[in-house]
Amino acid sequence: MSIAVPARTPGRRRAAKPAPKPVSRSRPRRRRVTAGGLAWVAVLATLMFGIVALNVAALRGSIDVSRMRDHVQQLDQQNGLLRNQTISLSNPYAIGRRARGYGMVPADAISTKHVRLTTRASGSRPAP
Image 1 (cartoon, rainbow, N blue to C red):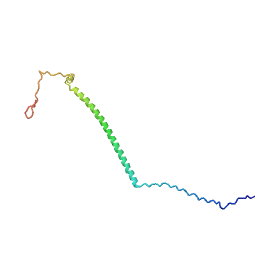
Image 2: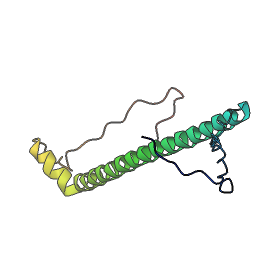
Image 3: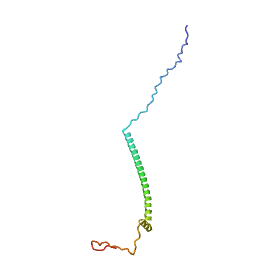
Image 4: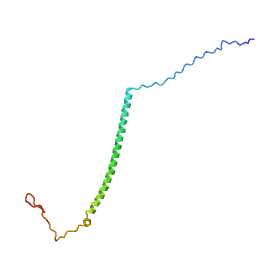
């Protein structure tokens, strides 16, 4: 058995589709690292390092100043206490009280004699 196939009409020819063009995706070009760019990076890194070093030095100086200020305040307090102690001990009544505590007694004004020291080598007497 044979099957009949209709004949094609010549007017209805399909045009052949052109083959799709391969899509070329352009890759981004890698930028070359130049010596000038590296030099700028090195300069900027050096400057940043310098700024950090200066900040650290300033912080250390600030800490030292704070410690010294605290020490000065402590010494001022100690000087104030010693000044008060000196004032209280230089009082004549306090001196007499401490002398009596050591067993000292006031000298008798009538029987007290003064002794002159030797004269100077020039022969003159010392000033009274």
